[in-house]
Length: 335
Image (cartoon, rainbow, N blue to C red):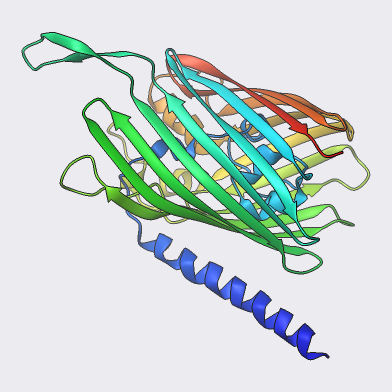
């Protein structure tokens, strides 16, 4: 074995050790956090499959925003845009760009935003003194590298900013991701640690935690059948009753366990079209507990994948007041 191959192996294992070493602090995170808009999906494809998916290997730039290890699968010079009407007067979305670096690397950048519309500014006395527009923003840069024939790793650096009238806060964070993909078996498994970091400037004197999360995902097709399944495990550092929204009743241990799962299934009649269905157990429980039974936890959607243009639309429910529609549009400028 040549010295170059040995050095490549050392660099590969060093990268894996650093990734898993940085994931370890997530285990210490407690419940209660700010910047929770970071948990909203920024992909119509992901929304259709339950809102969380880190293992789907597709030429879809919106999926790489949830796991930077997937960025190497995106076509060179791709621009993507996602928009979702979160609730009345509140909209969220993202804009992303990716570019390949050599034969093994890729970099990208994206901006995630949530706009809450215009809100009246009122004193404790009830006097209205003006209006303000609450806003959440996340500016991110990504890099991904093919570590071997089946392994890829990536990192996302984030600058997070929130502005609510006279109150502002910003933070620095990072996402780390690894993906294993067997093309012949059409099997993918990923692990991602998301939102590792902290506030640089807090809203008040006390600094709050970021919504750090550890996720594991699997995606597998059924042989020659045009069907593909995904299982994503989320919130893997939170296993106590206090981490869940309740209405006075205690959540059973079995319910706490199942609430960590997001299931997704796709029908793929061709490589240019998909129809997806998903179920998010955690969201289904919270929506039902909040008084909503209409499609609680259920989501569905579809998309078209043309040579340069990709379109996606999905339905889900994230709030009792209104359903949510997500749209994704991407275009590849490569000649």
